[in-house]
Image (cartoon, rainbow, N blue to C red):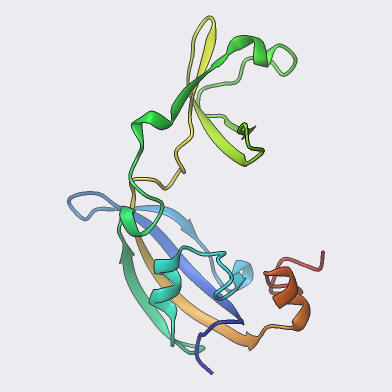
Length: 166
């Protein structure tokens, strides 16, 4: 069995960011005890990631790099916004580095990172935390299985190796 659409893929990985000289900085690492399981082809992963693991089998290992334009995009300097300080009357002034759950005028959920706190406003960066980063993955496919009808209907993996039933 190889990785293809509508399969639940379980894998472990090491994710590093690469700087312009090729130096690695560890972002995240999993192993068999905290492996990632997802429904392949359901749009849960960035397309380039799925393209890189397509056709692999359980036990296969692979290393690959995803450039910013293939991943989370370049940093958008216009994605920094100022929120009025009176928005924080009840919750209190957020510290620099705090991640704020926000909602845009269309009801879309997003997160912003506090970059500065001024007397009358809080500056928030709405870029994805991985924007502008070159991502280096070392992955191992641990298991593959056909998705259940319920998983296909819900668009994600369930059970011991997935999100759990909803």
